[in-house]
Length: 156
Image (cartoon, rainbow, N blue to C red; front, side):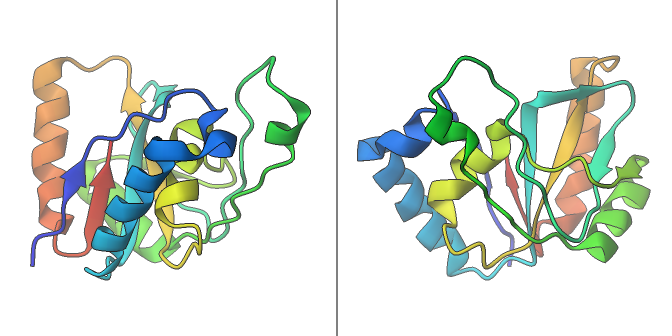
């Protein structure tokens, strides 16, 4: 079965605390995706821009608070998700990316995952955006990632 690829706007980090319709919609989407039992949730976040493509290959994900000027309660939040280093290495090898460890999840990822998968039952990872690539290169990368759509949910 082919798993979904979805785009979700993370908005302001404050939305993690505010809940409301945005949080309910993400929770509903997470329940539907969760019923498909993915092996991995792979997030492309606009907050991880690199030279070359990288995949976060850690076993345990740190929570990055990569924002400034928000209320102290946001900086105390933690989304300690687990990763799947073996599957992430397989993905990185297939797409020609490097594996990095101990980077963690930036708020472009965990702020969305917070509501989609509050129980953190699925391994998660991130893939960076290569600043040196053109649109055609990003589309070619997406085509390569298609090979994993039977096991991996892609979130942009």
